[in-house]
Image 1 (cartoon, one colour):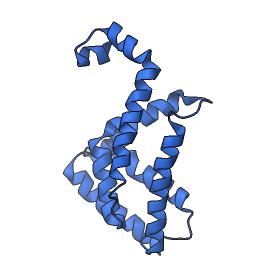
Image 2 (tube, helix red, strand yellow; image 1 turned 120 degrees about the vertical axis):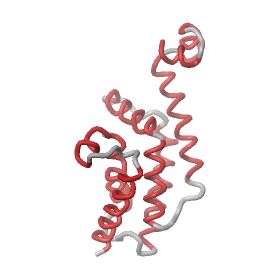
Image 3 (cartoon, one colour; image 1 turned 180 degrees about the vertical axis):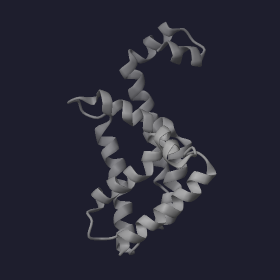
Image 4 (spheres, rainbow, N blue to C red; image 1 turned 60 degrees about the vertical axis):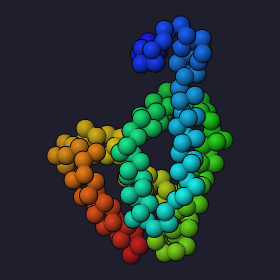
Length: 164
């Protein structure tokens, strides 16, 4: 909370008064992140390569989102996810996008769309979620153009394997 107050240029008491506690601040921040992400769903690409590029740019430019999800997962225990209903709608729209790609033959239809979304998300998020491992394995940072160019080619190969 002290670091948030410092970055905002206010005292810590004001931050506590406005958000209550660290969890209150986290909930507000996560809500803002999902509002931003919802706006991106209004114009999704319906080509798997373009969708991959879209997601990769998003993950590489907004690692805060991934860190927030990891923080939530580490602290979740048996509690409900923050804004469960809103997020369920968000992911439902993502799964519908996968279903559309399955209908056009861009993705295999024999894999349940929700599972395919999880698989693709895991593959796409990993380098940005754990950049230190990515750099150790590839010798470059996931934010670099070189990594993203090579990653795109590797991803295309994966999609082609899934289609076969």
